[in-house]
Image (tube, rainbow, N blue to C red; front, side, top):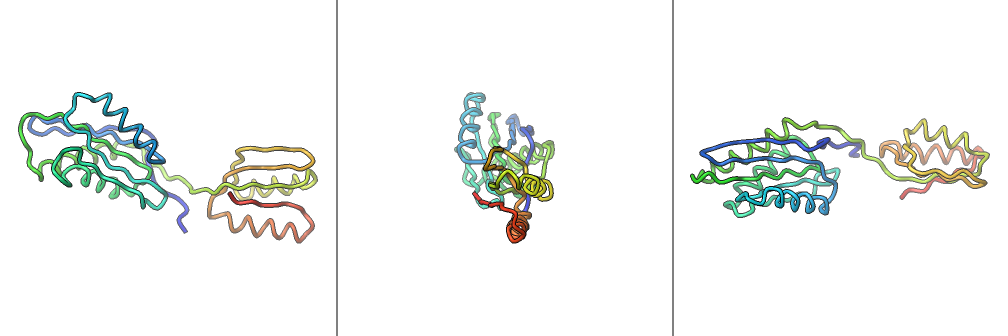
Length: 203
């Protein structure tokens, strides 16, 4: 079971220069394709005078969603080298856009591959790489008299509460590390068998 993944904490920048051309790599954390589109649109607007805005991204906990875009450079000379660096760092939920200012001298396909790879590598080397725990959302419902047992579950299983309601019928919404979910189900079943009324709902 996949329990964690690596991504970057915040935006970082790399720079590579070759024969007058300048390659600015911007690496940033993203969580979905909408965020990717927004970031690329903003970067193209900010660097509107650049010749190319090539990019690659990897999404999802198991890194199975990815795309590379050459943005007018020769096929596989820009997007693939960027993507290759993201994967070699073992990252997901990560977007890298490399902005190229053309210097007047063609670099050839091998030169472009090296430039895009080098700019991306520098951006990722300068980034703060973090490990995030994969969580699952759940809800605990229980009568008020079961509050102590419910809160013990929250503490023992490292559940991060996102919403709570205490009334005659109480409810706790939270995120649990995915590796603790099976144990949570077992503990709730055991408590139910002991006469403690708690309902666990996965969402």
